[in-house]
Length: 439
Ligand SMILES: Cc1cc2nc3c(=O)[nH]c(=O)nc-3n(C[C@H](O)[C@H](O)[C@H](O)COP(=O)(O)OP(=O)(O)OC[C@H]3O[C@@H](n4cnc5c(N)ncnc54)[C@H](O)[C@@H]3O)c2cc1C
Image (cartoon, rainbow, N blue to C red; front, side, top):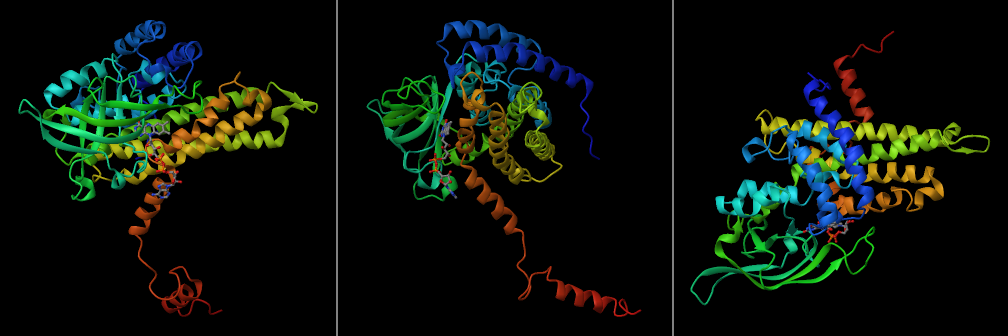
């Protein structure tokens, strides 16, 4: 049974969110613009404005909803979360206002899943309260995000007081928000000889630990100062942490890292839908407002084609994300086998980049010079599509994994010609119905 309706009670929450995001979060985008300003906890002006908004979200039970009930969240399930993220995606500040900003969301999830009681109390609670920022430090300057190439090592040592510690040595790249974080989750090789999925462990490294050397804060498009970005190139220079600062089991780093990705990827996908819908709204308004060659822009057929393609592509992708969310919920409920959602999540990750590129690009094009100017948000959004393409693993890798997953379950053709070879199939049909062609 397929049912696309939304319960009235939940629809009321979505309606409230829609108005709140348009009126309050989009206002914050205008007052405090910038790539990562929402993570700058020292910005007292923005924080002063933010806190009461977060309180309103909390009062309505809409705070940090990505956590399931076993982890202290409301347990809406992924379909409802997808619908919420569609609205959140309209605004850069909205994820912070709703306690769902990456990478803190994924970091909170793995702390909740794998953390000890002490780790949760010390790191998870303030993160959940929105009081601190965290960092996920995995990608390496040479190895990228391929764990098979990681060289950053953690070795067990004994300090002068005879206590067991971990010593981390190596470099990490694009560790977002490292300069603002209270703690970093660092993935390091603990057993180079082990099979790939057991080679690494995850560590909680407090930001004030000696030896964390930020070599540069790499800036990306949209940042104003090339020397003051938010993506750190870090040298962990013999960084020592207590033995109990491992998150999860020895050799469990891969598993921990995987656990933070699934939900996050479809949340990003649905936020992309929200952003594209906003770009479409702009496209439509422009089409019925601007005149050229004696008629409205929207009366030109190529403009209509752009609008129609955008409407269709947004709707198609939205359905893909909602189906994926539904599959995740079915897996969670035990009605589908574990792993059923993997290829669907991959499809969302692949599709979101193209949708964003095409829809935002068309909207920018329809606005002409105004579109590429910084008087409209479209140019920044358009440039940002590459960040979406790389964050959480490059699109090409996801495409490759998806194609291989399908090929793995495909049987090679039996004989010289494909199964669909018409002469063979016709011969088979005539064998079954020898008299079929008789007059
Ligand atoms: C905005 C942003 C924030 C980020 N935040 C973080 C963070 O907080 N923590 C963190 O650890 N990392 C972070 N990253 C890093 C991100 O995970 C990597 O950029 C991403 O995984 C790709 O790695 P790479 O940049 O080294 O590119 P590469 O791995 O070098 O890939 C570059 C290109 O090579 C090709 N390619 C690579 N591998 C394959 C393959 N297997 N098959 C076919 N083609 C391939 C693709 O065309 C790909 O686009 C962030 C990245 C961005 C852009």
